[in-house]
Image 1 (cartoon, rainbow, N blue to C red):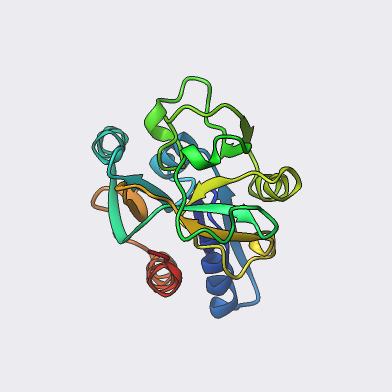
Image 2 (cartoon, rainbow, N blue to C red):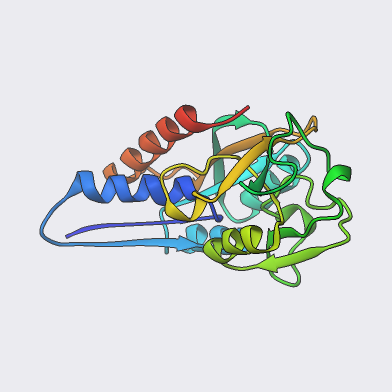
Length: 216
């Protein structure tokens, strides 16, 4: 029976890639798992063997600290693409047609972000520039809830901008964030591990999707 599990931070392209692998593999029997996790959860899943791969993002500000955390857990990060952060806004937002945005321009609007564990270090945040002070912050644990709340509250989040292919990104548009910070999107696996055939197919498809849909 085919088996494969992947964990990842809360990205839409994770879901799209995973679904395409399940469909392309087909078969009469299989056991797969897809897990949305906090950053620590992704590390724990891959380190324990619960998931073969973990999809994560590093930024130019967090890369060194994250690399140290991965190494301590016996994991290795492989970068697939570098991209630029974008602001995700509802289509009705007053700033949605801006050519670019600064955090100062957004300070009156609710900032939605993914909650990490209470004792998680700041560099485990899934959003670029997460350590910048916001006046209005709302933590979420679920990707769909975060998207719905952005629309309902006229809020925003900072994302990779890759919102294609899945329904809960349909109500959001993205605008470039005015920053020098870069995103490094990739995956972690156990250091020295030989990836299974399905994991290799997942990585190849993930790489293809990122290169096709990444926004700069």
